[in-house]
Image (cartoon, rainbow, N blue to C red; front, side, top):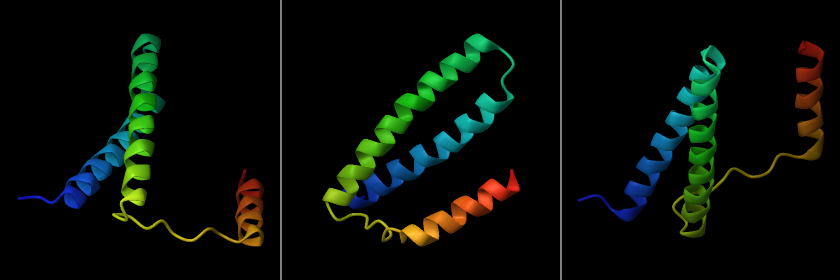
Length: 84
């Protein structure tokens, strides 16, 4: 039987996978009504993902990576800006 931690992790993983799929579908969608529907579904799933993520962190099921130093953030930002 799955433990709560495993179920939360599995659900979070499925949500993350769905979000990636929605992004691909939205980018390739030519029908505006379908595109808007997919965006609404994606937005709802993003909210669910955030809530499940927060619950996982609070229950110590997940430990987020440490925050990047401001200098590292600026370097990555500059690299992306130069590439566009």
